[in-house]
Image 1: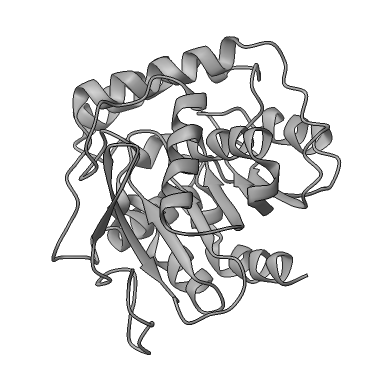
Image 2: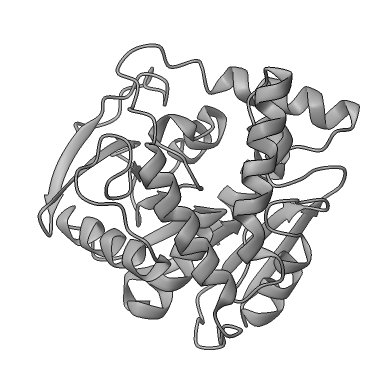
Length: 285
C-alpha cells in the first residue's frame, strides 16, 4: 500500500505500484491515502491506461478522498489476457478492490468505465456507496454497439490531420471544443517519468468486442441500483450518444444529471473547473 499523501503529491508524479488478484498483477496509482471515508476507485475509458486520467480530475478528487486508479487486465502495465466483456472487467475490478483490502468504495467511471461501474453495482451492491458516471450509457443503449466504427473513423481523421484522435472523439469541432481538446491533451503530457505502457492493438480489439456485446444486450434493468449516482455528459457526445446519458439517469432511481452545452464525450474534462466541485459536493452529501 502507498504511504500517506504528501502536500506536493500530484497525479503527474505519484508512483505506479502493483498488486496481484486472481493471478493478475494489476498496475495502479493512488493519492490522498490520508483522507477518511470510502476510497474513490476510478474506472477508465476505451483504449486508456493510467496516463489517460486528467490530472485536474484526479488531483481534485484527492484533495478530499483516497483515490485509486488501475489498469484493466492485459492493458498498460497490468498482466494477463484482456477481458472481452464488461462483466469480466467488472469481476476483475471487484477482485482488485478486495485485494486492496477495501470493504466499500465510491466509483468514478468514465465512458467504458461507467459501464463497468454499473456491472460492479449489480454484482456486488454492498461494495458500492456512490457512483459518478460520465460519458456513458446503459447496456443496450442506442449507438453503443457502433463505438468501434466511430473510433476507427476518428483514428483515421487523426492520422490524416496529424492530431490525437481524442480531439475528435472527446470534443466538439467548435472553437471552444477544439481549444478544450488541446488543453486536455497537454495536461495528459504533464507526467514525464514512469509513464504507463500504451494499450496494444489486441487489447483495444478485446475492448471493442466488449462494447459491441454491451450495446447489443437487452435494455438494462437498473432499478435495483439504489445508490446515489451523479450522471454527467456533454450535449453532443459522438462516442456514446448523449441521449444515453438521459436514459441512464432515468433508469437509475436515485440519480442526478448534469449536461454541459457545446461539449462532447469529454465534457467533464472540458468543464473540470465546474464539474469537480459538484462531484466533491455529491460525494460529501
